[in-house]
Length: 497
Image 1: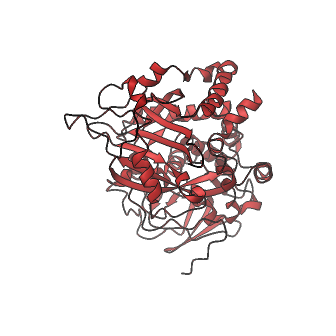
Image 2: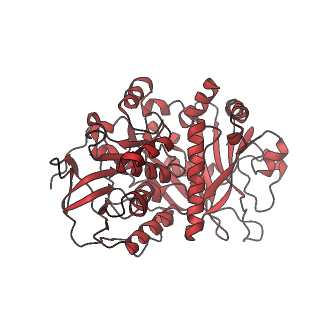
Image 3: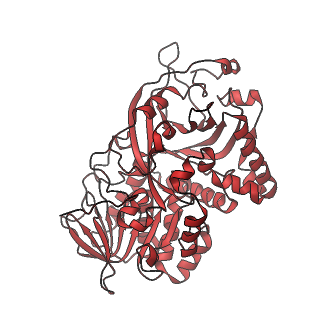
């Protein structure tokens, strides 16, 4: 079968030989290579494309809520959860102080939903709750962030109670960031093994529902998506045959434009990179620092060196590996438009191994205030170095809803839906975004309820597409703005408040 060429700006198919992620080192014996039926079904009520956190929770909400009697087929180009969810930084953190209030509230709701879901079902995904420290290495950035955060505390005290602004040197040292200019500590954050969370959901669906009800087909990439006749809905062509469905939900994130080229400028594939680093050991050769928080590091080096935007969680002891991601600005173009995850960038790998401490104090004992004067940096060993493809949205927000005809769909009743484009921030958004798109797919009262809960910034509408294309920079242009591109809502909050 001939696969069509990729248009300018359009994503390709997920690469067959991806880099090896820390999270995928121990894949599910049930899911690896899984095909519920030997042959691809010819028809289904609903086809979900993508098996990451969005696709998994969409299937969960369909089968345990809005469409329990519909036949659901999930198609995955590679192994289950082998894309961005299986390759991210392993943390879940609402960004309250730097988001619009309605979005902050939605992210907090998603965080608490996930936390309660894991606890209720006793899911073995290493969920650990703590606070999240946003570290500012330069005064100007901290001034902007702290001013906006203080305004939010006055105007929305419910949200303002979710974080603390830290300026005092002693307090910064106790957070293990003695050289920082300031920090914002968010109350709610967590580390999690994302693949194991998704694997549990998919395994449960396979156990609870027969093949005629829920069918997972891995290593089955969708090569073509087209409107079938009116009754059949949509036709999806794969190397293993063709399946038609009344409704299709694309949970394809950075790969969305491969099936819908009109999204090439709205959801842009962007390659991120993460390393699993071995923490430095104490004089006894055994002890390592036990971090009490997750960390986001923001700041600028003196020009022309690149801006820093990195994130860190620590795995449980005794290993205590440091899962450290970021560093895209070490390569030209910041990997915007890159959709292959089969290689790592050496400059980014070197950056991640050498730029964690300082500013973070990783001494195995309690952090010392005088460590602020420490020069140089630790060069840490990496056990895993991997890449993954994020979906960067032109207006920085996810796209959730029915695909209009102008973008390759057929409108509100046309049967094609999307839930994607998280701009590297999917963990505190995707699960409940999936809930709302499932409600929209159901129509009627369920759709109205879903739209009332979904932030208006996320809903896919023709007017939003127009605004995104005419009032926002392209993703590549915006990324050149540095820190402002990562937290655009913060600056919008300052203007609005």
